[in-house]
Image 1 (cartoon, helix red, strand yellow):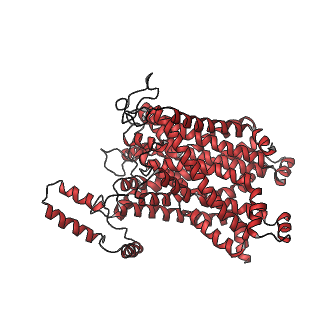
Image 2: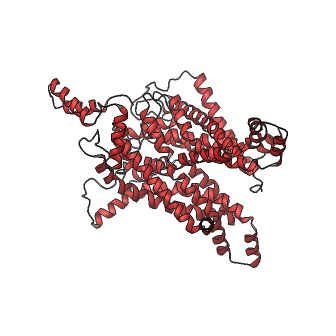
Image 3: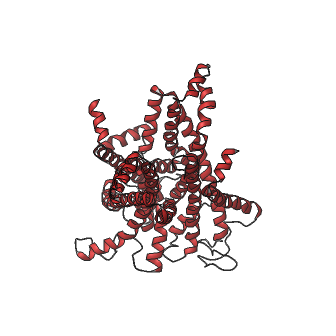
Length: 303
Length: 277
């Protein structure tokens, strides 16, 4: 990206009307403070040392606020939005996928093209449409932010209700698209499973439908768990953009602000945080996988 | 030829392909024949649809319909090119890893897994931020380069299962070199599969371009569907009710990716005997 961010900070101060030699001094002191006068590899080394100490540096655009502070405020919003919506969407989608594969017929022929179409819409596109429909046309839900500007964050009932109102649309757009994508994948997995011997045997024994679906669900779910681990990065990326659509006060919106204002420390900090979060989530999914599929644990014990 | 005939017996493939080709070829012909400049300002801020401008005007007072057609062309070209790049890199790495096995496979597979787990979204953002100028070509390259791991993983699985087939052993006994076997005995057997991966990667490329543009990291001086969306969002088209400024782009993205997914699913049903009805 072209342009020097320090010039931005200094010119912001210059709008107060300071003489040019003062600006020059200011410019130099900032260059020194951010360490921009040092060679690139030393800057990089300094950055690494700082990051390992948990220090993400100072934001360019919101100088002198630290990136840690900004992200610490944003992270709870993002986690509260993404974790429940991805988990709920994933569970509902898988359940619908199995049912569609098992029931076939009308249920499948309606649900399948619908889930396929909805899974092709990126989160943020659906978010824009929901925002327009519920927020602008129907006027029943707020169109931006995490809570109303005239309220002070507190644990009062009115504030919580207000937060939930703002939460609903971004949540819905992530859940719907996740359901679509998962249902399509799960349907295919279940079709494989339905041809297996244990399903035919259970059917001939006259076992209840809901019980067979549960068997199939448990077996077809395994690849879906791996799939979740692998596509988590893409999902989180898309969900971060949903925040931008709603100006939701999470990491995605801050990342967007950082990009617009060439705030490199904020961009680096935000992307680092997202990467760490996705890697941690992957780690937990791996652990959960070994509980769901005992064969994994057994094979490791043998080794 | 026979493969093609089977392919076109699938309604999903035919329908998806026709929609996709209609939009792609239509937009290319229009932009080639029409002298209408998508960046020309013909009206005011968010004029509603009229007879003259069926989709109204955008925040700069430009004709949305003309922009949309140019946007579809750009987005599809970005998607296809990024798809080709991602498929190419992924196929090379996947085939070598799967077919060679041993330590080469270990190294390449760990590399692939590493890139699979790191969210490509993050790499995409960081690469795009660090570019001095974001031309259409560079953005396409960045998207292609960040999305190969999926292909590599899928192709590797195929190649390593092909490795144990008898015709490969025959070729080895005949003294064919590894490279020769890869091209004549392994790749042809995976072509249909690779093409399916390519279709999905192209859809992914279109979505990635849109995502990057929404973040303000899209191609500069070009009109793509993502760029249109990001303008609509930055100039508050949604909250002021100017649906014509964003809905056509949203709808086009959904329809294009839907048609590509449909082709992929149709092909899967044709080539995968277990899914065949």
